[in-house]
Image 1: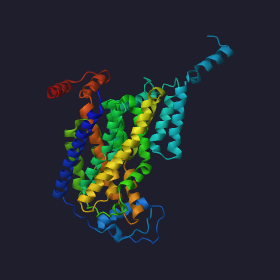
Image 2: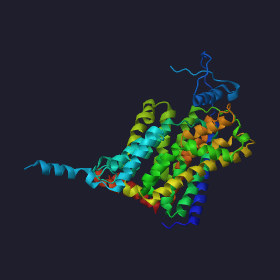
Image 3: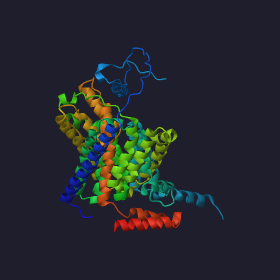
Length: 88
Length: 411
């Protein structure tokens, strides 16, 4: 297949347009789904007590747990702090 | 049959692989050892590079019948899984079973970051054409910028099978180097204030939406780009196993044993294609250089679009999450988190970056679909059926009728 830089530029512009079109359609689809089926919070489980010691070298886990808890409790991530992670 | 010690010894010596060993084989054995070294001691994508390196080692031992081109050899059978598009979609099923689309559903606008990061694919396409590759080869090389190994292998096997080995090696090598490649570009393209932006918490998403999402993506994307159905379809099936809540055993199998087994087969098959004839070429060096360009432009595209979103939303989007649009799940999201927390230790971007990160998986699959629509062989499915006819027998009347309908639609 013959290839030139101008043809490659044309293909790139066309392809980026298609990608944005497909993903914008997906965005609207998601927005409609989320509007039609809103989230209903389940009853909160009983809270567990944890000891107060900061886990070293667990930044990723702390970040993930903080973000999940923030979403669950409806607070900003900087409004609380995780002090301990215990594995069982 | 008579045996003498000297004739038997000479026969054994002449039957060793040393007599057939050429300089190209020796260099490739060195390349194999380098891949194994990088996997074990440098921790570069060890799950992929270790079996890939060992496959390369096996393939370059003369007379071993372990190269992908050695018909009847063990790794030739594994290679059929790539040639007939079986292994990459199965990997995608496992990826789907492992992926939580929740962050993407909570902030669907991040899909745009996954789209913007695909600019790396197309800048590389232009660069590859400039360096003398044809459109099909350039497309297969460009998709390295999608930072998605199975997609790269899938597209290369369809558009440029002779470049499969260097493309796979470049894709996986640079994916492992994401923590080194991305941060300088991210810091160069953002200000200190932008990196400190704290994003609002993600809204929770109902389980019903999570269940319907894979079906919606399959219908929307696969109807628009049918060529990508094997990849996206399997990705979404794996995610259905995860979210449906009624297929716990299938979900567990897909995210653990299946993906592990297929990873071994896929990496060995790719390694077996790394022979001296296919790898020791000037094109390989060009592909390695273009791969780096692809990752750099993809990162830059995501971050720049992140800045645009930041401006449009009045500073509610941290541009750093744009770099996660290159796919490379979850490494790229972790890099966003790391660079964000370097600027402000109380900044948690990980979950926000997971949105564009999984959007990047969809985006790179869609990019591959566009290439297949433009440069793929439309009749490949019929060719595959014809190739399998000696194995599975003549098509049944129903299949013949289906083929007739497909032909009629094509015309």
